[in-house]
Each structure stands twice: as C-alpha cells, then as structure tokens.
Image: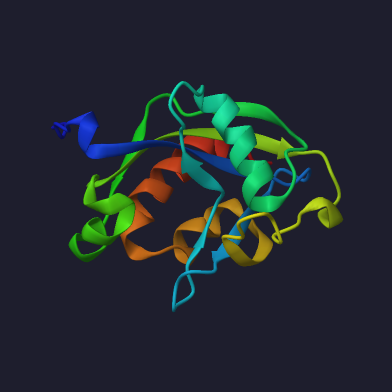
Length: 159
C-alpha cells in the first residue's frame, strides 16, 4: 500500500550521504539549534530554479565548509519525512508538513581539516565519521524511517 502525498505540502530539499574514502563511514553533524543530541547528515532546501545536484554541492559548502566530493549514487525516488505536529507550526512558517528530499551519495576526497563548521551561517556544533549502519541510532525519532530508507538504498555503496 502506498501513501498518497501532496508534494505541495512538503518542502523540496536534498540530503547528502558523504562517505569517507574508506567507504565504511559517513559524516554526521550535531545541530546547533537543538537542546538534545540531534545528529544528521548534510541537507537543505532547494532554491527556486535550482537543480537538486547543484543544491547538494551548495549545501555541503554552506554546512561543512567544503564540497570536495564526487557523486557515487542518487536515490531512485524522492524520500519524505513528516515533522512532528509541534514543529510543523514552527518550521518554515508553518507552510509544510515535512520535507521531500532527493538524496545523493558522495565520496569525500579531502582531508578532515577541510571540514569547517564555522561557516557563514553555522548549523552544526560538532561532526564525526560514523559507520553507515549506525546512522539510524543517532538521529531524531521522527527521521528514523527516512534514515532507514537511506541506509537500505546506499548500503551497497559501502565497503
């Protein structure tokens, strides 16, 4: 059974699974704006007229200070998550129920020193490499189904 969704209710965005060169670990970062441990992979909204892949590289640069990476995979479909009711009214001026995202798997080609969270508009306070299978254990509850889909789809790219 498939869920019927109105795409207009979901903010269009992208997400990036940034693999370390070892292809086992991926980058996760801890959000600045949460009172509890809220880790996530880089992601962000698509600007009007912007291509999803272009957005992915822009978001990497804006969030972790480098886009020194190449694409090794792309989600077959748009992936969705719903915000909890309390957050729906706070986020994006209450316009959206959640996000629909195109996810890209990328391999990082740089050194750890290139990753810089002190960007123009910082979103994260910390980052780390973590084994791909652990991502679902690190993120907020309402994103667990999304991250499980990401794990299932991109696990074959991991070594």
